[in-house]
Image 1: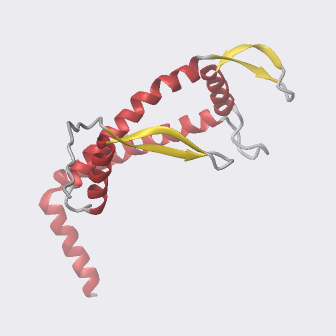
Image 2 (image 1 turned 180 degrees about the horizontal axis):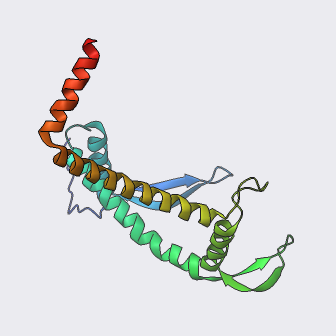
Length: 178
């Protein structure tokens, strides 16, 4: 007895099986089809996961492509969510007030945060934005003053020269010896 199997043509889009999910009643529902491309992709993923040290640049590139694809597909949804008009509701879900957008709500909350008092108990004076500005100004002034002092030290050291430094060294040695 001879069994002959003939395969006409196989491509990456050739369907080789069904994807089945079961509902809460235990009934099987076909939700998609498995293709040759799905199997090839699964094999590639398995190899990349197993051989981490062999394929680091390929793994990084695949991760970059994945991140770019996610970003390009999600960006329109985020843009729509931020700019789509919404209406505030009360505790019962009934609309109140006029329509606004999420971006306007974000701006309002940011303004509230930046203009609120730093301390709820008034131990410290000023607003959050005022404290942020003061800290940044202080940091810049400290940096500028440190640079100015460094330049003055270098200038004084050059002007004093080796004569003064040798006198200072001799005085220090004399003090140590006594």
